[in-house]
Image (tube, rainbow, N blue to C red):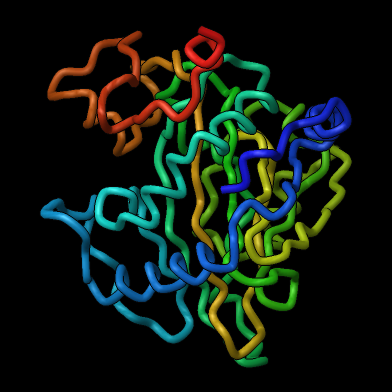
Length: 278
């Protein structure tokens, strides 16, 4: 990645105000091509190393979205991308913390419907932290990296401006609910609901706060929309017991304890400001 990119005061102020920030281009054209090839290999079950995916790779479907968590376990190009120190440094500066770990990644393939009217590719309005309540902080961030130019025509992401200031909303784990209008009515209520599309060039990333509502519509083009996503947390994040569980909790061991840090090899450290200073 391009190491000379820094978070300016204006960038930080925008992130704090809106709940998201769009980066400059982070990836070279060669890296983008390699990650697009990584998609093909993952969906055809051609894995790097001797490890196993977190769960079975989704079968091909001409209209349904495909999503794989922890793709970094099985693909070297994905691993290099989602553990890149630059992502960690950008995330640390946006969140105002000293260190960043990878919570998990996602490899997402949204098929092109070629103009057909369908909600099959919709990703419902949701807050990422709705799924992450087993972590002891809401101060987490997602870096959504586009592998092609992305806008609303091919199912690009939309955010709700300032929604990270609402706190955690009940039932906001609605990624797979494809009725966007019903979710808008449910979560909007009396709140000011302002939708803003994330228009990205290939290689750019959208960083959104874990409480920012976001979703996306169908991909109406003839080409698939490909992305690699890094979910990132402060380096000292700990397990919070007696909450909604997440599959990643099992990687703390057979009997995780309340307050146990997510600090083993499943949650690699991307960036440590104190180590960098020393």
